Image 1 (cartoon, rainbow over the protein chains, first blue to last red):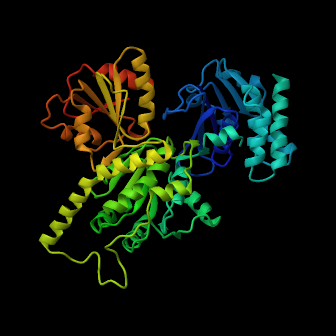
Image 2: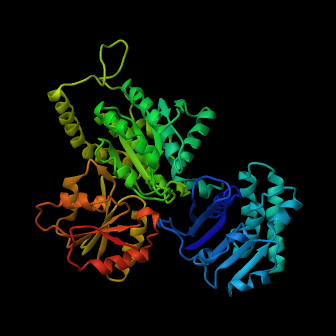
Length: 179
Length: 387
């Protein structure tokens, strides 16, 4: 079983991203369970979306204590609490304009920066970074297939479907080339 | 979604699954008020309603107290009634929960188990509904979105047969917000399972009857004796509904579920979402040579006392995991189990552990540690804080 965490702030789309990623894995034949936890339905409060992917139905109903990969919507959420759910092998994709070296002080972690805001701007999507971040995350995970991911985004994005799909593909290519 | 996805069901959260169960049950009236983490039930119902798929009359009054006030007379006219709430909302309904059962309504409600304030919190903990255990409602605790969908439909059948309101409870986030494959049964299947609600005694302008009139001591006493007799029929009604539902869908349910209890030296007794994690813990312990099993309590009110005694007779050790804390006594399921095992030969050594109170995480590894720590100990009367 693989366990992923998506961390964001209310309104950024972390919960939606978790659901979309789950749908893509599910479409490829995997069993999934994803759940979001938040302290009240408010914009700006931290939101954690947890995703389990397995070849058989998922029965666990507890928190993910050690994620194999983590997607962070907001660099300001990286603190000691955050680092408790990762280890040196965890792939950590962070939405940031900063280079990888800027996170060196945290310790020896596998941090992959992606400037989601820049990608979103490029496709005229303002602050909506979730499709770009999903593209970057899928590039790092090497699954599900980016084509499946784009199909799910096209199907489920509430607006600007074409731009969302393009942002996902663009960020995917960007991370694949850089890493 | 591709065909493989369709063949295995659709991805729904526990709350969405409840709304689909409600849709298939063809309710007439739904008074409901939003509260985190129940709100997605209300949102999904409103979406189904606005698409024209759900024909029920939707009422959105100013509080949970008013929502329950609308549920009771609607149900007494013979309407099929659903509502949903959580935590503070359920607690605000409290006085009317007694009224609903006393008047023998057949409301079905979903409660999303969440910590009550103070302090403010949104975490999975079953104290909100367990604190309503004396209000005369049937209570079922669900482990998964699928079980919640199936449970809503089964409970309409039970509540409308016994004329007792029923509550299906599922844990905040771990079930309410868990998105996973859920099979939505066909309308035909549900129609075959769930007959229309036609109570003989009802509020009807053509019949001269009333509900809630003042009663003298003897008549008041008789209403509770009648309720008690009706409650006594519920375990069998729940078994029958679970069996019939299983014949139609392949998913069987019962008041209790035994998981790997054959020859078990130690049995974990628990309710709700914790059961899923315990299954993993039991498998790991069995793998390591520990003869562990699980007894899942699905029906909590009425407490299936005979079935519990039968399931636990001769088991050397039982460990209750309570995700709730009743100040002054401890874990509520532990209290209930102690009373069930009263004066029983070959009763297990019973430990009460308060695990995960306030939504604190309980992992399979933690459960394995607790079993190793307590299985050979002498039991205490009171419950113990762990985590």
